[in-house]
Each structure stands twice: as structure tokens, then as C-alpha cells.
Image 1: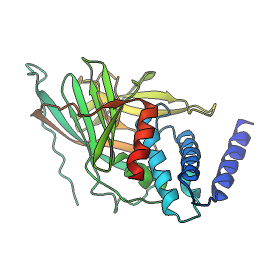
Image 2: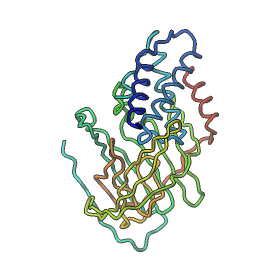
Image 3: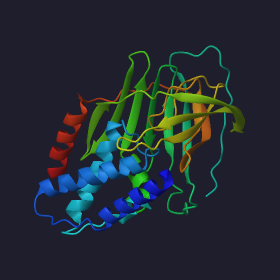
Image 4: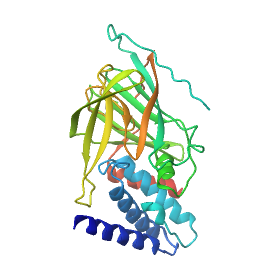
Length: 82
Length: 209
């Protein structure tokens, strides 16, 4: 049962990320995008990014914020769960 | 390129204040991702009895895979631990500036009765439970440490075991390939120590400039 929930959760995350398209108009949108992507990745890979580690959080946040700004209007990060 | 594995054995007696070790770690990936791009990547841990400093020797470009994203992110980080002062700092470089933040100590190591040799040193297995912030699913991570070097440090921000961690991780694995005994004076990173929120604010300022 737990496995089924895990698969559903992973599928949902993949879908939400795959369809995550945002217009890049203001910083606020990229901030929100980066926060969401960071939370998802930290939850998916606690063995890589310690949930309590401030530097891991801000590093991932910077990564996704930069990627969002550079995407020119659309950003699809499905590889977050690869 | 074949890396020369250098292991200078040591005598665990008569350490001066500055006596320490420089450990170099390789990184490998469980999915068999080609290391062609990553061969030049290694990480350095400097340790004395009281302090440690961990940093990357490589700067990677942005890539889409989770593995290279991890390397890319780690290449911008550094960690400093001072046991006497009970201080553990994480640091990040942004626009040429170093930002520092206090990090939590690692807790909950579980020692296992399993042993293997790494670089000729007897190592014991330990695991630690990892609890994601927004999930009930618990994962574990493995470390192999050696009591022969009884300094409680390891790669990235890992500390708290009775000896030096020579191998850390499962999916992505840090493995020591060189240990060199040397006179060291570890410099505490300079800069204001920020809270988590301040770090985020400051990061934004720097990224927008």
C-alpha cells in the first residue's frame, strides 16, 4: 500500500514539475518557482541534500532561481526526479 | 587519468596543535553515469584534532541531471567545523562574496558490526536515518569511518562519528583516495554569520545586482 502511495506521489510530482510553466516577468514569480522546486528536490533526495542544511537549501534555491530567470519564459525541470 | 593513491601512514602520538591530515575524496555514481566529465572533480577535507574544512576543487557548469546538479551545487559550498568552539558553519560563494550560516550537528548515527578496508585502514560501517521535511518516508545513508584516524570529521558537512569518514553515501558516494599527514593551520572562514532567513535575503540581493 505504501509503495502504491509512493508511486502516486512520485507521479504527481513528475506531472506537476513537467507541467510547471511560468512566465518570467517579475522576480516574485521566479522566487515562488525556486521555492517550490527546492522543496520538491530536497524532499526527493534527503541523502543528497540534508533537510536541515541551510546551505543546501539556499544552493538549490539559487540554482532554480537562476534557471528560472534564464529560461526566458518557460521552465520545465522534469529531471528533478530522474 | 590514473590517480596516484598516496597514503602516508602516521603515528597517532605526539600531535602538535597544527598536526593534521589532508584527505582527498573522489565521487562516484550508482547509476554508472560516465565519469568522463567528472574525472577532474575531487573534494578536499582538511582536519586537525579540533577543526575541519571541506571544499570542492572543481567548478561545474549547470547541467540537467540530478547528479551534475548536485556536483554543481556542491562546488560552490564549503564547510567549517570547530569542536572547541562548538561551531559548525556552512558557506557559499556568490558574486565573489562568501556568505556563512550556522549549521546543525549531525545526530543519530547507528554503528553497525560490519568492517572493510579503505586505503589500508580498517573502517566500520555506520548509518544515519534521514527524514525529509515533508514526507513520512525515512531513508538511510551509509558512512564508513576509521578509528585509526580518530578525528570525527568527514566529507561535506558530515561529522560526529568516532573516526574519520573515508566513504560516505550510497547513490552518490564520496570515497577517500588520498590521505596525507601534514602541518596544517585551518583558517576559520571570515564573514558575518547569518541566520537562514538573512542568508536568503542576502543571496537575493547579490543575485539581483
